[in-house]
Image 1 (cartoon, helix red, strand yellow):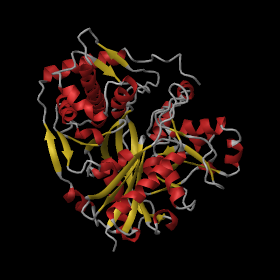
Image 2 (spheres, one colour; image 1 turned 60 degrees about the horizontal axis):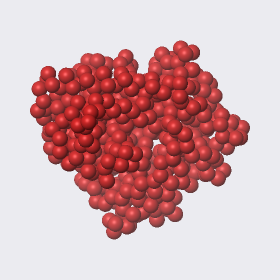
Image 3 (cartoon, rainbow, N blue to C red; image 1 turned 30 degrees about the horizontal axis):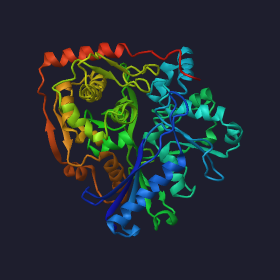
Image 4 (tube, rainbow, N blue to C red; image 1 turned 135 degrees about the vertical axis):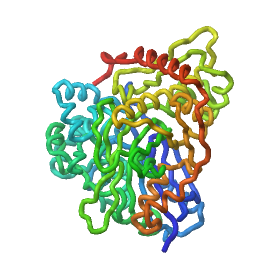
Amino acid sequence: MPGYVLALDQGTTSSRSILFDGSGSAVSSAQEEFPQIYPKPGWVEHDPEAIWNSQLATARSVIAEAGISPKDIAAIGITNQRETTLLWDRRTGKPVHNAIVWQCRRTAHVCEQLKAEGLEPEVQRRTGLVIDAYFSGTKLAWLLENVEGARTLAEAGHLAFGTVDSFLLWRLTNGALHISDVSNASRTMLFNLHSLDWDPFLLDRLGIPPAVLPRVVASSAILGETHPDWLGAAIPLAGVAGDQQAALFGQICFETGAAKNTYGTGCFLLLNTGTHPIASESGLVTTVGWQLQSRGTDRPAATYALEGSVFIAGAAVQWLRDGLGILGSSAEIGPLAASVPDSGDVYFVPALVGLGAPRWDPFARGTIIGLTRGTSRAHIARATLEAIAFQTRDVLEAMSRDASLALQNLRVDGGAVANNLLMQIQSDLLGVPVQRPVQTETTALGAATLAGLATGIWSSLDDLTAAWKLDREFVPQMSADERDHRYDRWQRAVERSTRWAAEGIQE
């Protein structure tokens, strides 16, 4: 049997591919950035062809770098930026518009209207989500209303909607598969958490023709195979999950109560709540974690999670580099921030595209407060790292209220966890140990293990648990009084950023 699994990890700012062997070790990897498009303030788009071309290029690169035949790959797993919305023509495979990225706020006023109609409790009951422009439903509705001829084509069955997983699966199979897994579907604001299917009431309210929707499938199952033209062989496609759910799986958070935080463009804290969804009363969302193929069961049980989504984490560091120009590279932030003992009472609220959980304020805007003549770029750099950690605490406080738990430790992953100072700040501001695994690419690993389970590379969840290895544990060094004082100052800073652009967003 072939002994490798290829993970395609399509992110917000770059596409990556990682080849894993049967022990879960990375054999080769490749990454390629692609442009971000900002047509108007608060709007964010991607060129779908740039997504596809960068992802395909990295997949081909890792196969060549590893020196293996494509036939040595037992399966492909896909993980992806979630909520980003694509619409393409079934007849040609060509997108009818740029992808509308999860960060995009163009439908904020539509969401305000839905809230004004009193629909939020019903939306939360059905989907587990709050009404927000973050999710795919209003983005798809916008495309159908604003792309010339789109609604007519959609109602005639000629258009296909999908999140990035669906688009990649369509392209990899030359249109043979139009599917999405339960974890990605649960991020659309169109999917019923209880029936695990598209919700007719919400489709009708948002004017979504059912003909555009993908078929919903399990996260770990043999779904089809790639067309041999793309990677040189027909390779089974056997695992799909949104990036944060894939990271929860890759961090071996299989037990109820286990939690992880991923530090990427955004910051995402997920808590496994088992086979029953828990409704949040604290500004979090309820989501499907994954669904594993189960022999002899037509509808295997799903695993659910509570999630808090922070929109801007690593993207704040990119803004320091590209927007303010105070960093030559993102890697410079660690040494620069470490050059001062604290932030000098400077607080940065990185609400550059609004605030996510637990406040859900699309009209909040970025705020730096506490500046004096003595403030340096080092203080701003440190305040940026602290902002990432403060936003994580915001989510954890809400999660503790909803799930009635006191977290014992937090498993972390994503590119920013290589920053030891950030991890220490995070432990200090949470007051719990932070555990960094040896394999920090847990998003890609989650996609790979979902695919490997379906194809027999790994036989059980116990096999995966045994393979998880701790790299370093960061323990709190800050007093509880200091921790709470700084958190109180953070909350005061956040209040000054809220609702700032309520009158200025363009419809």
